[in-house]
Length: 249
Image 1 (cartoon, rainbow, N blue to C red):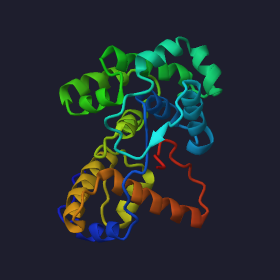
Image 2: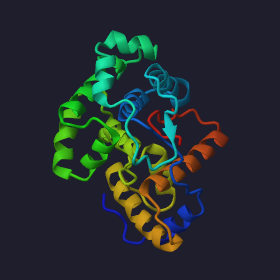
Image 3: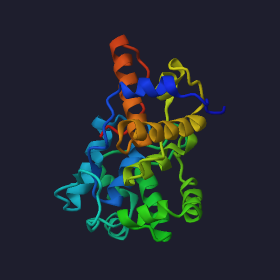
Image 4: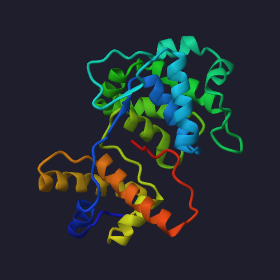
């Protein structure tokens, strides 16, 4: 599907939402990897946050998250240290206390997927948050790394896990619109698929940055739409599963 040329109606609708920049980020790439892998198919507050915080505490990280941007800080748990500390799946399981799998049928333990992700990134020279941010500015190298990461079971539709990892790292422009966001857009005259929705959200970010005279990111718009759609769903008491990878920051 192609993005509509006239976005005036949806721009006005988005202006009425609660647009807020990201409030906090993890201080280490290792914590971002753990979050990204464990978030697929799991309730974030009940399962994912406890896992990440257990790893941070075990590694002696007293302050695991800070307001963004996380720049000029040494990564307290670079991937080489993470892989040395958790050199087997059992070692990581002992800390995470979570035996969830990447999928109910044929999936691997998420702890194993974390180690595979960390190993792939490390082998490509991506060991800290700063390394990951440099990677995001190198499309050719990023494509090579993503091709390798795609081989780890549990990637999700449209590469949700990889996209979520880059969002955790600090990418404000790569978004993964889910069903609630797509339905919200459709209700406001923009009936598109997930791939085209990413283009629409980027266009909206550009337009709203001019209208509001500040930088508005695609992440802000995606999150604001999702939050609005989720509140409506809650009021209607629907039972649709909450997207497990959705950032609640």
